[in-house]
Length: 228
Image 1 (cartoon, rainbow, N blue to C red):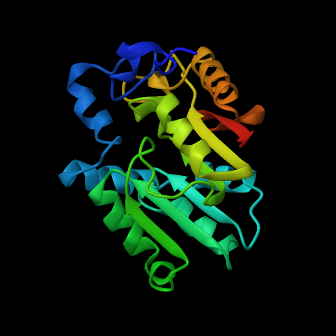
Image 2 (image 1 turned 120 degrees about the vertical axis):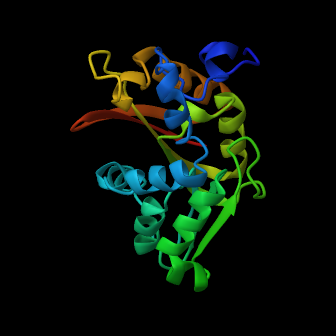
Image 3 (image 1 turned 30 degrees about the vertical axis):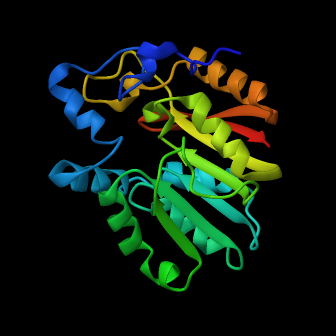
């Protein structure tokens, strides 16, 4: 297997990895969703927290049990973390995100669960997960694959920290070429990029890899499900 992530080096180097790049005037705004900071970062977190339907869909797909140990990669403002904590009552909900601003927002949103030790939030990235081998029974990530510098490296790390048969759910926004220039759906994943991720999962050692799609106006999401 190639040592490059799906899509090639040039695609991986871009902060927004769709087939089309946003106009230059918009790239700073779009890039701020990768690692929110400052005023734009606070605004990005507020926008991400508005629509909870996609978070709920991913959480439902995980088939959570009360004693699961679940990791979210790129927890953003912590909306899904809260949903996970509602279902995982005797296990652990953990999350990593590269943004200090998102760490602050997610901690505030889930303060009681963090204080009780049921939720653990850390600064971190997919390619360097700060957890031991086989630590989690399940893992998920929503709207983050666009920003991973190397999808292959990130998925290898996820495979490492998942226990045998651990469940993984990855969800991405699909590309809609006819969407307006300000619509993130214009810069989402293509069918080929989804297929590349599936191939990479299989090559790493994941099994039972499947995909499902959900229309959530004004976007379409694809979830990629696999087991370690």
